[in-house]
Length: 211
View 1: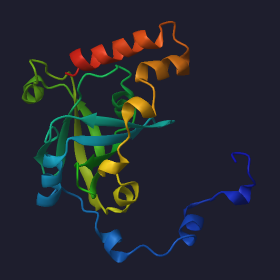
View 2 (view 1 turned 45 degrees about the horizontal axis):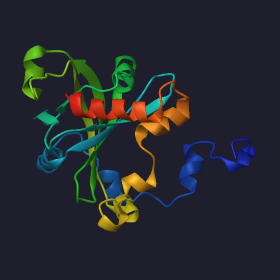
View 3 (view 1 turned 60 degrees about the vertical axis):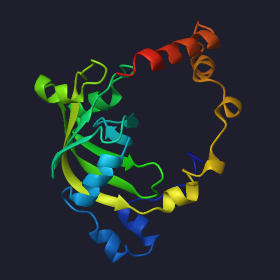
View 4 (view 1 turned 120 degrees about the horizontal axis):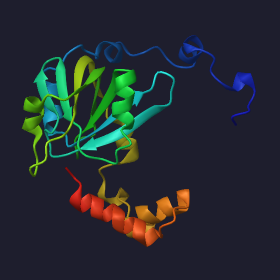
């Protein structure tokens, strides 16, 4: 498919829009430049978000973030702060932000089919007094992602309704559907450790390196 004829691919935005109906006026107008009570409440209830970022020369990246509901702080109508909890130290998102500040956020709330999109520009905050507010189990994050909000919009429920994301009968039985993560990593990269050893490392990290 990657070697298909040129006519098999969209050339530009004009051609793209010619393939679709006109944008609904409500959809066109629903993006606002600030956080207001409804979006602030959604963020307060959200325990999970995805961050999209990109190096100026590529590639793009989408990374998950999660913690107790309200872990993202709304500092004012134009500013968010996301604690950057301990991870695998790849630092994909943070490294991208140092080169290209533009990011996109997608907030989810369990049981709610609508999502919240926030777009803006980010900087990495190292202010100890600011980050102290995010202390958990005696651990303070080394950085926080400070977001200058430029666009806020609620996304309708179609994607989550189609995917039935929150439906119990769509939940996968993890133990039978896929191998443990450590075993998959072993298969993917041919690590010297056994799948069992890698899985033990993964589980130890989850137990001991959450914060």
